[in-house]
Amino acid sequence: MECIVHFEVVHEDGPKKLRGLLFLDKGASPGEAELVEMFKDMKFNVRLEDREKLIFKPVNPGDFLEIRITGYDNGQEKSKEDHNLKSIVGNLLPQKPTGL
Image (tube, rainbow, N blue to C red; front, side, top):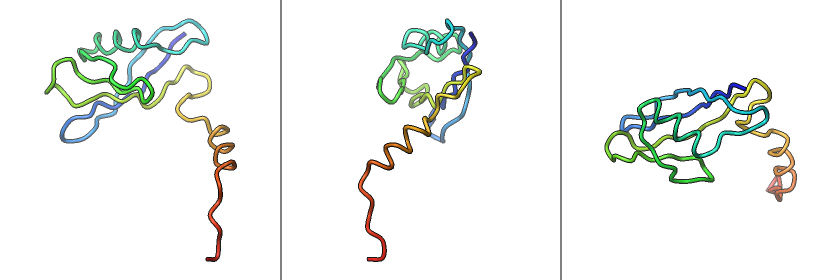
C-alpha cells in the first residue's frame, strides 16, 4: 500500500513543505527505519530526535535545522488529526466560566 508522508524541512529562513512516498503492508504505519530510509533516498541524512513529535535532526549540522512529520495519507482516512479524539478530550477539560 502506498503511504504519502507529509513533512516540513525547517531551514533558518523558514519551513518548506514536502512529501515522500513509502510502500507499506496494508494497515501498517511507517516506523523509524522506514522514515529514515525514505529521507536518505531524498538526500536528507537524519536521525530521529523526538519520537513523540516525530522530529528528525540532520546528522551533519548546518544542512538544515530539522524535519517535522506533519501527517500521513494512505488513501483512507488521513492520520494527521483525530477529530473525534480531539472532541472527546475537549469535552473532558474543565470549561472556563462565561460572563465573569
